[in-house]
Length: 260
Image (tube, rainbow, N blue to C red; front, side, top):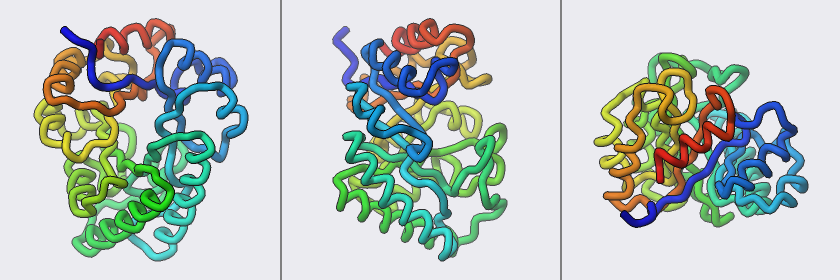
């Protein structure tokens, strides 16, 4: 079999956590992998740029929401600033969620019922976000999250939700970040989800369930998913956004083996 058409990345937020952040980035880079980061406001941007690592995804906003005027303004303003930082890091993809997340990943403004008006407003906000992406030559991705375990009260949380919003905006500067860890908890049927979502996907993130650790530690058959991604010609990034069950090098070995 030939080489996989997609590229592999790993989250510096969740691996080598006993090291200073820049050293985590270097360790992932030294493994020949791309790097993903979260909140840029807590990072030394110049130090990250000096590592030589290829950073392919970062958080694309600092605060805000998709559906109320004050939250929308904060969301778009911080997205504009994030896009400028992404240019300094030569990072092509910026990740957002259905609402701002606070400590422990909980939504700053929980929402239990999403109304039709909220859907329309969120789509309009994301159109404006796509315009920011176009101006800065970046792609914003909307990540699905699970509400049952990690992010209760998050609106527009499922993969079906993010797909509907991305489809409504219909811009190459707004794509899905299809997180299969979250999707397994929230929806399941991952292979068919990959097939259906592929036209709208800008990135795929993975971790096993339960535990959110590397492939092989839980119930998801990631080699089967890898085969489907190769079959359908996915050429984007597959990122390990998971914890190491024990040793981070062993976790990356398992990740690369599953997606070889």
